[in-house]
Image (tube, rainbow, N blue to C red; front, side):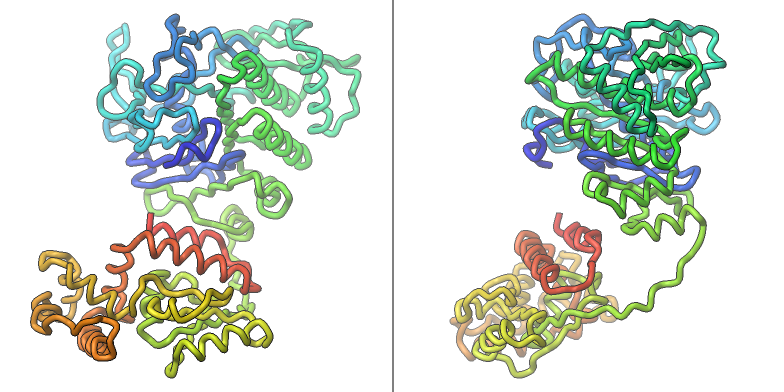
Amino acid sequence: MNPAKNDHVKIDKISIEQFRHFEDVEFEIGKNITLIAGQNGTSKSTLLGMLCQPFSFGVHQGKTAGSPDNSKYTSNYHEINLAKYRDITDSPFFYNCEDVFRLSRKHDTSPKKYSYYLHLSGNCINTNSPVFEDGILVRATKRKDKSGKERIRFVAGPGARQEAGEGNFPHPVIYLGLNRLWPLALLKKLDVKDDPEITDEDKEWYIKKYNEILILDEHDNTTEFLKTGTGTKEDFIGTSSSDYNSESCSAGQDNLGQILTSILSFRYLKSKLGDKYQGGILLIDELDATFHSVAQIEVIKTLIEVSEELNLQIIATTHSMHLLKHAFHSRLKKNIKVLYLIKRGNNIIDSGFTTWKEIKDNLNVEATPASKKNIKKISIFFEDSVGKNMFFGIVGNRLNKYLNLVEMKSFDAGSLKNLAVLSAKVPELKNVIFIPDGDVKKELKAHKNILFLPGESRPETLIYNNLKDTEDSNTFWKKCNSKSNSYTRQFAIIRKGPPPKPSTSKEAKNWYKNWYKKQSPFWGRMNNIAYNKWAIDNKGECKEFCRKFFKILKKVSSEQIPKSLFAKILKKYE
């Protein structure tokens, strides 16, 4: 993890060891807006609550702390009493477990199994803090309350123990749960104040956004403050016009008022903290609820704006197909990450969906036959089958449908140079990629269509040197013996004796070729066992090769290759 990539604190990902239907899974979180979607029962709200847990801002377990911050994770707030910084409804930027979870006394009976890590980035995070590399560990524990009853609570920290300055990470959070949708008519207590005590500029912004999002023409409206009493529903800023006010507003107007109130709270916090402000997190359960289709899009536009303005990371759950379609097929998509959850067996996982069609089919419980579109493949030229096999060992077969791999039986540096030069003039060669062995780098000049295999030697030499340094106990030899129990390092390396010197001589090249030919039957299809081992042992070179190859492939291919395929290939080298 590299915190320097974000100026302000952000959640990069959540790694879940176990929590209800999540087990050994990892989810990436977007920098601006993340929409968590999926069918009912896919733990979207649970995941939202998990993201909320390990943060506090001057309060602990709901009690205001009076002492200055002493966090070991960041020194940004040291000597500041964060408890005095509250939102504009006078509530803390903090939520207890019971605010975001309803834990089942029947099924959540083994909380000690519940644990996950939240990985953060940001310039203010101390590089020597215990969460810099590993993230914050969140685990469930049981503790007796004052009445003697056991209750489940969540504890955050760098590990199993906490010391002074550890525990929750100091970062402001606002969580808008489904309790915000509780009808005003059912509230036993409701007080309306004419003055919500916000600036004229913010009142103007509020009314402007209120009209834009709901497509209204009520610019003479003013703002008022609703005190809903303790418990069921949060306090919020509403609107008052000549013929109605917040007491008689619709569910959508009510919902919007609470979202805009939350945004103003972060705006106030930023103005009060000044340079110490490190952004915040706004969590919204069922973002689309109560909004008509156009209002849904206008809401997300506003959230994108304030995400940039206030360095907010906004994470919301949704079932809205209209909203999700815009996240894939509109100008909004560059700011929105869609995390679509599905159930496999008893576990919830990331679907890996990268298109709107996949999500639409899953939400509609439909299946669309695969398109019969003929994909125009890119031709990749190699010196021989050995170079092609090395390429497969590094890149794998995820891109097969986009590639046509060609072995040039009679191949030398001169012919390659001529082809590369011709590729700039001959249309048929324009979209061809040449991948020679690494030993001809010195003979050829760099060219936009040429990418050398990793290493400075032929693949045969690279594999020999790699296996020469591989001990008898290495699992490689066991993998090679799936069809034979006789393949050993003694047979492969020792019996043959050392190769001739220098390794660049014609005699040495023939020796390596003959050695490779004799060993390759033991290395599986396309010699993948040997090349996979070499690739893992040389992650840095292979990762760089993949990145360069993807860059060239994107330029020459007319197909839209999913970015997720590139990410999955690179994951091997993380």
